[in-house]
Amino acid sequence: MADIVERYDIPVQHFWLHGPRSGPQVEHDPQTGMWNVYGYAELHEVLGDPATFSSDTMRVAPKELMPDAEGLSLEGFITQIDPPEHGKLRKLVSSAFTRKVVADLEPRIAELTGELLDAARERERFELVRDLAYPLPVIVIAELLGVPSGDRALFKEWADALFQRDSKTLFEDAEKRRAQTEVTLKAWREMAAYLAGHAAERRRRPRADLLTRLVEAEVDGERLPDEQVVNFAMVLLLAGHITTTMLLGNTVLCLDAYPERQDAVRADRESVPAVIEESLRFLTPFAVLGRATTREVELGGVTIPADQLVMCWPAVANRDPRQFPDPEVFDPGRDPNPHLGFGRGIHFCLGAPLARLEGRVALNLLLDRFERLRTDPADPVAFIPTPSLTGVSRLPLLPK
Image (cartoon, rainbow, N blue to C red; front, side):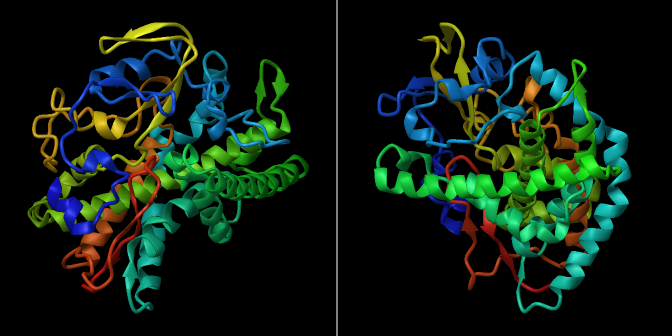
């Protein structure tokens, strides 16, 4: 692992990439008051027990992480909801991500990938995130929702403001905390207003899209409140692209770092899905997830009291040597490879099949178009700075 860290100068915030971790699998951080879960078996238990480890973290989150957001609501954020409400809301959109529906999108994904790669030929440099890994999933999810894919520059601006926050400095630097809070709330309000406008238009003129389905949906005989529709759409738009953006960038980075693996997948295209799965383990996009205990519980040999914020680290658990032999080795031949890159349990990533398909189609076309997928030494790779995400923000490639 040290070679990939040194080669690409991976930020120290991504501590799980800087060598094997030592220490307990579950530990308390006295500075923040949080509990951290690092072990695979322990995280497997947490994600499979929503009754004890609730997704409603807002009720216990430190005030440092809870900006004064008057007028804003998390109502409808499915990632923050527990059963039974969670199951009802998830069912509303699950039909949009079935195997058949996703499989039927393959021709459109291939068409878009080809168009984006053709357009990139006109540029002096091919930059993977800008030219393909970001626009491809944004266009796909925007078309599913029914919002203009041409607004993707706005979506990126909002996603950067909402996701790329340095949680560590929130506890250490009050001035930076206020500045980050202002940026976050501005993006939140702008995105909410944008989606509210589209939702209102769907009430007047329904279409055959996912946003219309949300507007017309009923739970227990009642239509969803406007703010719940907006927040649900916000989750789908954000999560619907950022996972694939990081997945594709991380996979190409791994193939550049380990050229023998690139040679192998070029020789056997049937191994593309396995390469993607190993990249999800090796460079897990969503590095950390939050949970809140509803009762006192023993985990990993320690007792966590009720009403505690628990930070779950799939990026670390996916390198647990108790589960994965030689976890620091990028090995697409792992079988089985039960990584937690898409989570587990009731909150398993709804868009995982779509992300996998987009990654497979795009990677195959990249291998077709480029004789070698190689980073440009004169134009360094840049990583998303926040420790909660593992992914590249810039990945310049040499011409084929």
